[in-house]
Amino acid sequence: MQKAFMTKLKSNKTLKSNLITFGMVIIAYILMEILMAAGILSNLLKGLLVPLCVYAILAVSLNLTVGILGELSLGHAGFMCVGAFSSAFFSKCMQDVIPIAGVRFTLAIIIGALSAGLFGILIGIPVLRLKGDYLAIVTLAFGEIIKNLVNILYVGLDENGFHFSTKSSLDLNLSENGTVIIQGAQGITGTPHDSNFTIGIILLLLTLFIVLNLIHSRDGRAIMAIRDNTIAAESVGINITKYKLMAFSISAALAGLAGVLYAHNLSTLTALPKNFGYNMSIMILVFVVLGGIGNIRGSIISAVVLTLLPELLRGLNDYRMLIYAIVLIVMMLFNWAPACIQWREKIAYKLKKKKIVKINGKEA
Amino acid sequence: MALLEIRNLGISFGGLRAVDDFNVEIEKGCLYGLIGPNGAGKTTVFNLLTGVYKPSEGIIHLDGQDITGKKTIEINRAGVARTFQNIRLFKDLSVADNVKVGLHNHLEYNTLEGILRLPKYRAIEKQMQEEAMELLRVFELDGEADTLASNLPYGKQRKLEIARALATKPKLLLLDEPAAGMNPNETQELMDIIGFVREHFDMTILLIEHDMRLVSGICEELTVLNFGRVLCQGKTADVLNNPEVIKAYLGE
Image (cartoon, rainbow over all chains, first blue to last red; front, side, top):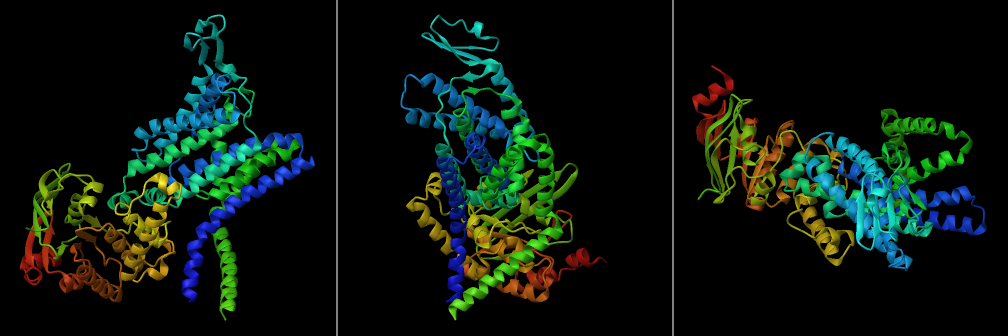
């Protein structure tokens, strides 16, 4: 009787953990909405709500590559950039054709995620076959290339169709009533402002739904088996390339999704080192490492905390990177130092013992 | 016809002839042993059989099907499963999940059905859970189904590896030193399990082993390898009394 009860308890454990993650996001959303309605929230914080969702989605999607697949990607901002620009391009073109914001934005989301996913596949096909740190190096290069490519790209539209150039907007040879859509380093201006906090939360929940359900399915097990032991996974008939590519492209598509959200929250979208460069990729990686590699809920928490922390300590903003570094070192010690692991296990054991005693008490 | 038929198998690594002119025929249901001193090429034969290495020459037939030089996953699908000399479990997955990875190609639903949790997902996952638990019961691991594989004691890790290999529903099971690092009690228990697996699953087993008690206790036929060549082949009792074999193992 007790044994059956215990196994039931355990099988519900993943479900319970997933529900906590979803619940956490929803409660945070309700809390923020209440604060906003009460007018307590400062303008600064209000402006941070959508970026928080963007960073949380990015952290969760990178955790799929780093924690679940076990490969290092240093160009996640590049996939975000692809998603942002492709969707903003679409929205700008279709602004007059599809006046209903909901429909247009839904299509923009699909286009942004698909194009980022496509880039994930294109990069993954040659690189995921290699062993070692090649993926990290290539994704790093990819992120930089995409950012620089977007900075020299000029695209215009007139009655003859699209015009492309890599020199200047004058070289587009547009007719009189043509418009320039992507203007090189000045990026895309006038993207419809379709994102808001509610949509951000919905997209974050969608990301969580996809990632968590993927992990706890047949495909997720195969992906984690590859992470744990590639040779053994191959020996039981797992197609290594297929599942690596699947995890990597889904991760890239979700980063693209974050890009869509990001692009439609700004009136001017430009590819700067600050938002799509190497620093951004590293920051996402820091979220993942701090939240715990492979820990999806932790990624969201650390993304939120590390974004809010420097903003709340506005006066200390100069020390932002210093705080980052110190927090990172402390968290690393907490996660991996043998003494800390021992201490955490001791605490966990004590808690567990109490729980079992409680169950036994109930049975009696 | 024999279940496994290997003819003139050979491989060279640079100038080193690791396996040379290896011939063997294993009948269905047989428990076959591959023995030999360290570095004789036993594990290389396993790696050739499972597609880790491509043979320089020779052919391998499994149940009439040519599997020479095929990829590891194709060979697994054709019906060859193996365990490893140094245990290779999915250490951060639970014991049950390790076996479920083995069931991967036998119980299928696609990615979308998995993400959207469609009825097929529930049905197949339930069936997977049942089949995995059934296998774990055979190895008395059902009590630890939710434990992480890395937290199992050594002997149980070896058992779990066999359970995972069996989950792929093979025709031929390859065991690479299953008794390595086990104490006499555990070895005895392992011998019983191997015997049981053979009866229960009607399995053909080829094993590499150094523990002579295990080899003489359960293997029906033996091949002795020495310096990549077959030294002696035949019934267990005959082979173990062969003066050549004794010389290879114990010296003159």
